[in-house]
Length: 114
Image (cartoon, rainbow, N blue to C red):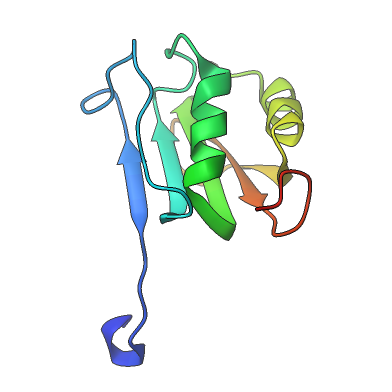
């Protein structure tokens, strides 16, 4: 579908199989359309660094998605943390069986902006 319109879609997925919990991931600035942190955010020792790096690696108006097994995360506290790190419109979505999912957007020219 993307090739038909000469489009490009960049996705980065970090999970417990490819993320060293003592280190944060590295990505180029504005190089991703979505960052999906599945089963790693609450296990990582530096959640704030994950959010900072996610923000920097996302293109403007891109999304961050944090998924954890049901009952692990405090959804309202996570939404507040996402807002603190300039992610907007955080929402929890009950779409994946057995998982809580929170999604937010990096907005162009808001807060940290660029």
